[in-house]
Image 1 (cartoon, helix red, strand yellow):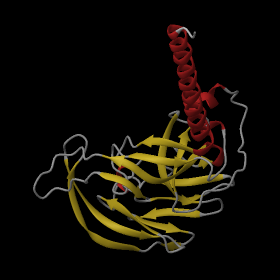
Image 2 (cartoon, rainbow, N blue to C red):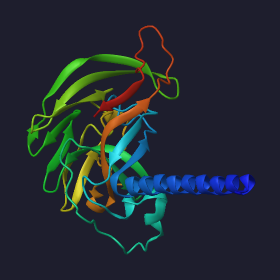
Image 3 (tube, helix red, strand yellow):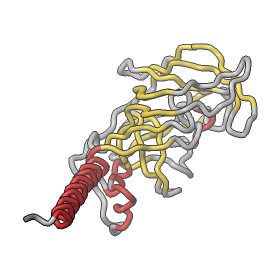
Length: 251
C-alpha cells in the first residue's frame, strides 16, 4: 500500500523541480535576449524632443550594428580590460538612425541621432545644418510652447528636417543664434560618427568637441527603433503642449 504522505512529498518535490526548470529556462531566454538581442533605455533628458520625451522607455536593437563591450548586459563589459576593443559582426549606422552610444567622457549611455558618417563635412550657420556643402531643407510646422523640467516656459519652432536620402525627422529650434548655431566645419574621421540631438538648442552633442565630439563606432550600443511605453508626466495647461502617453510607437 502506497504511503499517501510519501506520495504527496514526491509530487511536491516533482512540482518544485518543474518550477525551477521553468524559471531557469525563463532566465536563460532573458539572458540571451539582453545579451544578443535587445535592451531597454530610459530617456533621461530633453535633448531628443520632440520625437523622444523624458520618461520614454525605448527598445534598442543590439544586433543591428554588431556587438562590443558596451553591448553586454548588467555592465559586464566594463569588467573587461580597457584595451579590449572592436566589434563583432560590426556595421556602420546610417544617417538619420537614432542610436544609443557610450559617452566616454561621462561614462554613461546617451541617445542621439546620426547626422554625419565617416568622410562627411558638417557645419551650422545661423541654425541651419550644412552637410557636405549643401544646406538641408527644413519645413516649418508651427510653434510649440511648453514647460521644461525646471517649470520654465519654453517656446520653440518645429521643423521637419530632410536628410539627403529623403528621410525626415522633427526638430525643435528655440533660436538660430545659440552657442551651437554657428559652429564648424567638422570633418568626420574614419570609424567615427557625428551625432546631434533633435532639440537643437538643448543638446550637448558632437558640435561640442570639448565634450562628446566625434563618437567612435566601438562605443555604439545599438539602434533605438521604438518607444515601448511612456506615461505623460507633464501637467496639462491651456495653450501649452503636453505630450500624450504612448505605447509601441516607432521612431
